Image (cartoon, rainbow, N blue to C red):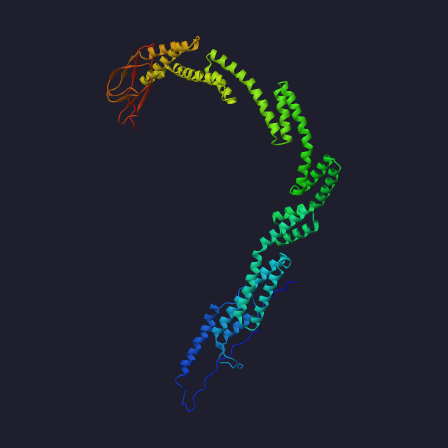
Amino acid sequence: MAQDFERVEPAPFDAAPVAAEETPAGAGGTPRWVLPALGGLALLALLVVFWLPGRVAPPAAQETPETPAAQGSAEAPAQAPKAAAPGPERSPFAEAQAARLRAEAQDILAELLDVRENLDNRAVAEWGAEAIAAVEASAASGDERYRERAFEEAIARYREALEGALALEARLPQERDARLAAAEAAIEAGDLPAAEAAVSTAEQIEPGFARTAALRERVEALPTVIAGLESAAEAEAAGDLAAAKEALAGATAADPAHQRAAEALARVSEALTRKRFTGAMSEGYAALDREAFEDARSAFRRAEQLVPGSPEATAALQEVTVVETAAKLRDLRRAAEAAAAAEDWDEAVRRYEAALALDPTVFFAQRGLKTAEPRAALDRALGKVIDDPDRLADPAVAGDAARLLERARAALAESETEQPRLAGQADRLAALLVRANTEVPVTLRSDGETSVTVYRVARLGSFERHTLELRPGEYTAVGTRPGYRDVRETFRVAPEDPPLTITVACTEAIR
C-alpha cells in the first residue's frame, strides 16, 4: 500500500540578536561613530518591519509552524535593543530566502500529493508498483532534507518525485488500452475471470470511458455466448444445422462483436442457404422458359440474396434482361414509327432514345434518331415563330424565319411520304413573312420641346409631327425633356389596323 504524504513542518527558530559593540574606554562622551550606527540600525529596522513583509509573503491559505518562524525572523532587527539568547547570527535576508524556499517546497509537495491521490484512485499499485515505489523513495528523501533545513535539496527530491508521478499519470491511457486489449482477447477465448479482471482494472484507470463500458457489457454477456457456442457445437455434430444456426444467432445477439461466434454462424448459415439457392435457381429457369420474365427475375434475385455475388445467379439475371430487352425493343420500334408517321417528332425521338438506352447498338434506333432529331428541331422552331409573329418586326428575326421556311420546304421535298403538318407550318410562316415585310405608316406628334426615341427604330429628337414606316410588331416610344417627367408610349403596328397617330410629349413638370 502506498504511503500517505503529509506536509513537513520544520521546528520554528529565532534569529540571533545583533551584538552591541562596546564603547571604547576612556571616552569623555558619546563616540562619534555611535550616532551613525544607531541611525543605520533604525533604518534597517524600518525596512524589515514595513518593506520586507510585502516582498516575502507566506504561502496563501497555508498556516504552518513555518509562518510564525518567518515572522519572528523579520521582527528580530526591530527588537535588537532587547536582550536575546545567545546563538548564531542570521540576517533578515537569509531568513526571507529560507521562507521562500520552504514555501516552494511545500507547493511542490502539495502538487505531488494531488497527483499521488489521483494515481491511487486509478489503481496504480496494480500496474505501476515499481514506479510508484521510486516516487515514494524520492519523496521520503525530500522529507529528510526538509527536516535538516536543506530546502534546495528537498525541492530537488520533491521535484524528482513529482516528475515520476506525472510520468505515471501520462501512462494512464496506455495502461488503460492494454487492459482493454487483454479483456478483448479473454472474451474471444471464453476466459470469463480474466476478462472480468482486465475490465475492472480499466474501469479504475479511467472511469466512464466509452470503450470500457462497451467491454463491460460484453463481459456480462459472455456466459450466454459460451453457452450458445457449446450448444451449436453439439447440434452441428449431430447434423442439425438449423438448431446450430439458432444457437449461434442467440450468441451473436448477446455479443454482436464476438468474432468466433460470428464466424461459426456464417459457416452454418452458408450450408443452410446453399440448398435454398439451388431450389430458387430451378424455379427461375422454369419461369424463363415460359417467358414469365418477372417471375424468373424474382426467383433469380431470391437466389442472389441467398448467396450474394453468386456467378450463377448473376448470369441468370443477365439472361432475363437480354430476353426481356428484345421484347421491349420491338415495342419501342413500333411506337417510334407510329409517332413519326403522325409527325410527332418529339415523341419519336423519345422512343428512339429509350431504345438506345436499352441497347446502344440497335440499328433501327440509330437510323430513326438521325431523321427524327432534325425534324423535331425544325418543328419546334416553326412553332416558336408562328406562335409569336410580332418577333418578325425585327429584320434579323425575319431573316432567320425566311431561312427556316427554306428548310421546311426542303424537308417537304425530300420526304417520301406526305407531311401535312409540316406543309401547313410552311404555308403559315410564308404568310407571316409577307405580313412582316409590309411597312405601315405611323404618325408621331410632340410639342417641339420633347426629345423622342422609338426603341429599335431611331432617336428622332424634338419635333411637332413625324411619320415613320414601321414593320408590324410592338414598339415603345420614350420622351424626355429637362425639368419634366419622362413619358413612355407602347403601341402595336399591324397592316390590318387603321392608321396610327401617337402623341409623345412631356407635360408634367418636376417640382
